[in-house]
Every structure is written in C-alpha cells, then in structure tokens.
Length: 520
Image 1 (cartoon, one colour):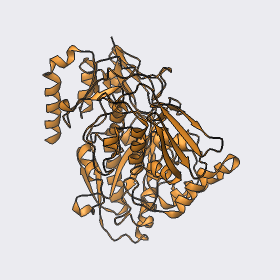
Image 2: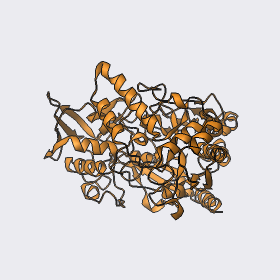
Image 3: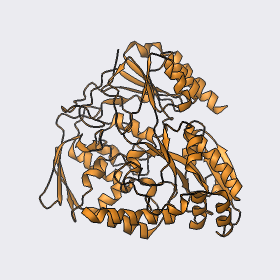
Image 4: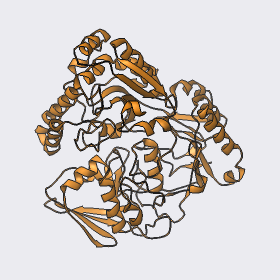
C-alpha cells in the first residue's frame, strides 16, 4: 500500500507540473529514492549521485580511474613527499554567491574525515593543517604515503564534498540541512518530495574547468535548465515511461526490461560504469549469531554465486562469478584464501552449522524488491539458510525504509542480522576503498562493524608495500579476509543504463552524472 501511494504521488507530480517542462529538462528515473541529502552522512550510491551534482571534491576519478584536480585548480607535492599544497580553482562560488575558499575546503575535509574510513586513515597521517590564504592550504604529513591523492579523489564510502565552512562545522553525526554546494547544479529544496521527486537546476554562476570532460573530471558544462528525478519503483512502469518519451533517462535498468526497450528505436542502452557492480552478503557482526566467525563461515560455504546471480540478474551475459574481494578483472584481483568456498554445498553447510555453536537464534534477513538484484539475492539467501538449519525471518520492505534499519540495535528491536547489497566496482576494487572489507575495531566502519586487528595490520602492510612485495602482501590480506568472512562475495554484474536517443553527451563515469548532456 505504501509503495503504491508513493508511486501514485510520483505520477501526480509528473503529470501536473507542466510549467516545469517549459524549460529544457532531463527527466530521470533513478535507481533508488533519495533520503539522505548530507553527502558526509550516507554511503548509498543515490546520495553520492546527489552529492556529485551539488558539490565538488578537490580531486576526482576520470573514466579510467586516474586522479585529476576538480575543485582544486592544482596541487603540488614537496620532494620529500611530506607536504601537499592545494590551490583552489579561481572564480569558484557557492550557490549563495560566496567564494569557495581554502578554509571551506579544509573544514569540509575534517568533517568528512570524522565519518569516512579513508578519511580517518588520512587524518592519522597528517601532522598539521595549514591555511596560507583564501586560495591555498597545505597538508603536512608525519611520513610519506602513496595514497593521499587516491584518498582525496576516490569514489569511496563517503565523498569528500566541499561545503561552506559554516555547514562543515556541523557535528559530523548531525545532518546538514542547508544543501549549498559549488557544483554545476543547485538542489531545489522547495520541490523535494521524498519517495517521489528530486529537482536540480543549472547553476548559472558555475565556472567549469577548461580540460576536456572525462569521467568525473574535466569540464562540467550544464547544457539543460533542470534535471528532475521521478521515483518509479516498478521496472515495467519505468520502461514504459522511457519508451513513450515521458522520461529521458533510466539509471540502472532491470534486465528483464531490456527486451522491451530494444523494441523502441528511440531508446539507447549501454554500460556507463567503468567496473562492474559487486554483490555482497553483509552480516551484523556485533550481534549473535554472526558475532561467531564459524557461523559466518557457514554462510560462505552455503551460497552459490551462480544461483545468486541468476536470481539477481538472470542473463549470464551480464554477470560473472568472482571470489575476489577486490573485483575480478581489476589490478587487485586475487583468489588467495577462497579455496574452501569454491564448491558451495548445503550439506557441508549443515555440518558446519551443527559444529559452530549456533543456538537457534532467529536470523532477521532484510530485503527489498525495489532493487531487483537485492530482491533476487535475498530470496535465495532465505531459502538456502532455511535448508542449512538457520531459524530465519525474511522481512521485505521499501529500500528507503530498509536503510533506516541498518543500525546497531538488537534484531528483536527492529534491526537486522543479514542483508544483501551491491556497490560499484570503483568502490570495491582496492583495499583502501573497499568499505565493506574494512575491519577497523573503532566501530565506525560500515554496517556489520567487523573487527579484526590482524586484518588491519595486514592491510597497513599492503599499503606500505611496493614493487615485488605488493602481490604477496595483497594475498596475505585477502586470505585473512576470507578467514574472517568479513562478508560473502555474491558475484559481479554489469548494469545497463538506458536513455532517449535525443540525449547527446551521455558518457561513462564512476557515478551517473548529468552535466555535459544536451537534449535535442
């Protein structure tokens, strides 16, 4: 009933706002509802897309995941690699007309560092933060580090978006309510309807970079007046809206709708994200039974990635199995330690569960049908866990509701034990950015809150390794992650995007973006 009401509201907004479409507007069906507007607070991809539209980062990834300046006009590194000097892009202004200063950038970085695992690591390396003037600031390190630029430019858990200093001074655990960035789009607060509609308008004062567009870098030129997201949870309805020209762009197409879209000469489909999406089964490791590593190992021995991907994606042309935590096909792919889980078996899992110490506790599985890959995976998870002997309860709900339940409360208080999710390969392909494999014992890592000091030592050793020492260090880290089963890899898949043929300039990037796109 709730889903129907949200969808009806979305259609009502879509149908009865003709004046909005007098301007050039790209009408988008996003993959999920936008519920968190503060980009320093939430990791979902939809919040990152919102953040990329409204804010900017100092550095960013191009289409090949190379790091280049964005909000920083340039940066330099001292010969001893201990001092990084950043110069802000001249002429950059926030949406209220105030200039983007070094003070804003530095305050924003500090707020982000309090929330993000990459940021916390970088903060621990910094000996001093220095502001030279409104345009220039420095990070002085305690020791050289090879991943400073990578950290500041990566599309990781939380993007280091630059806010005005007054917002950046907000407590890191408290949501910023004034969404004022310096990016190419302005967020229209008065037209925001959670569960139904999100609106962005062109920032007429935005001064783009002069380099050619490339992924999240280069010139961000807005060629339309508005971008409107209309939340349509039902894939068939979204496909119909796209083929009829009622919307222009569908972010992450349900694969079963590809044959429908293929019949329209006015619809283009393609792959836009450089690396595949990566599925994983995430367990709450601060609550029984998954605080017991032996029980986590049962889940790893139970699940067949082919079965998960068949349920999640269906078409084998769009998915692949992969027992690497760092994305098969990426430079960091390794299978070290995965050998015990190469042949999943319900019978084997039953034996392991009987010997694990599991006491029959209820296991709450959270799922949603709004994101088809998650809906398919949790159905398989539910069935196989029952067969293995777990006492399971599957709770299906709206994605926006599900994300609010991923907290540290006990499952009996409405929280969770296990759920399926997926993330971009850009996040998952490197030990530094793979937020799901972070086992820092400070309880500030992402949902599941795994803790393993040995894994963290091995991760630090890998990050310090160079040359021929890198591969053995990576393999040692990977073995430990499998030993502790920080999560269960579910396979990897490419997600098609679709857009009307009258859109020009749609290009690959680590996140779906809407600058440099024109509408004929």
